[in-house]
Image 1: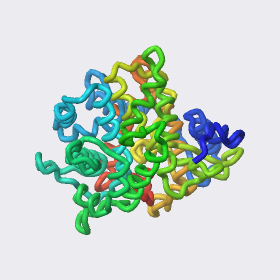
Image 2: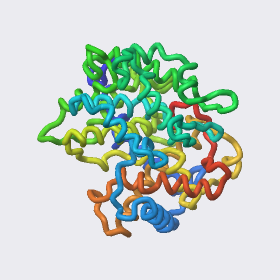
Image 3: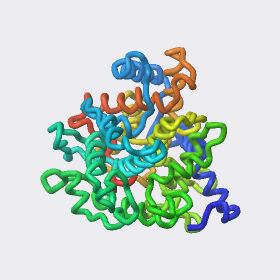
Length: 412
């Protein structure tokens, strides 16, 4: 794959579409279209903004009474059921250097986030040690955590707590299904998509030794690539996102390309100016948020947190729909399922990105807190994602999202 900087004008377009600036600008176009009543699918009722902010604040106080909120990242899900799995992981990694520990945590986070697309409402995971049963994101997190600890993703049985390219490429659907306890009675959506993603990851790691290492190529070596870019003990969050998008873009299947470069979570909408492309990079930003904490544990200060955007997925988007901030014009939208590439889903996701910024600003104003004290990544955690899940559970059996999405296991 050619590097964007080597492609001239096309490279500039690729770099732009990989930026949070592009996400907000392109989503803003669709937001303004909806507000101007030019969308056949949605309208937006900003008078509900205070109500939504109040609901989010209520949920934040329930979850974190002192408002000491951690980042919205994969690490939260590993503690599902109140089990101190991260402390258990730290014990297992005790013999490693701090950088080696961070590399192991990168291995785990990258694998687990890539396996975190929607599970469907029929799947569950029963943890062997605790006998606790988990569904959806928590289930996928605990399952992938246990697979990692059992050495499922490692070639060397003597060093199980790592992920390497060779093993990823050799992984079978049967092994993955076994790790997730998935079968005909306990079906997991998008199993083939998840496997393909991991196998592609193995190939990408081998193809980019400058990012993932020449000796023992593994996802966790990305930590060394990022540490080399730390200046004055600081690293911008967007630098981490850039590395994720550059290093992993080729794993996404069947996406829009420019000059042979896979754009990833970027979709077409005819109402958007220039090329009509709308970037979201949901999983990549979720992964970025998850890669920040191991860097902080190494003493690196993360700057520019709010440059990244809110995550346009069905919990945050569902919150906006369920509380009337977004309304559908045609109720048939609720009764059908929609492709990720459809205008309806692209608009819904774009509205979600912009409205999360509005909600965050309103929440901070009501709490008299600054963006530094309460960055978007904490509002998502405290916050909008949890509130979206809560209201969905109150309104619909199984807490399913208000709009049904046809998922291949690689977007949500």
